[in-house]
Amino acid sequence: MTLSSSSPEPFFSVISEEQLIESIAKILTEISLENAQILDRKLTPFDSKAVPSISIKEYLKRLMKFTYCCQETLIISLVYLDRMFKSNAGIYPTESNFHRSFLPYLYYLNLISKVFIDVTYSRH
Image (cartoon, rainbow, N blue to C red; front, side):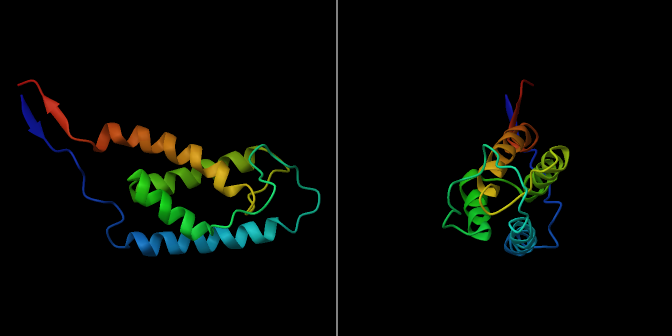
């Protein structure tokens, strides 16, 4: 049995993780603040009673740190989150629902990505 590492080179190597998180957090915060002004929006099971005390930027940093998520998974999670909000008319991403709605996508995609990134063992 031999050990072979299949860890690919990071796709986003031109931008640091900190820069990526900063950029995404800025965009999401602006979108969330705009959507909070919509008066006829539906409440979702993801909406919290109060806006979480942790900022979107700090939340993303914490998720990246503790889930060992790669940058690609973060980007793809955001794409799926965007599709979820677009497919449900009247539901908008806000500061009160982003934290809860984003986490399942990130965990799911992080689990799937482990299949391709983790160390594999050969039987030869």
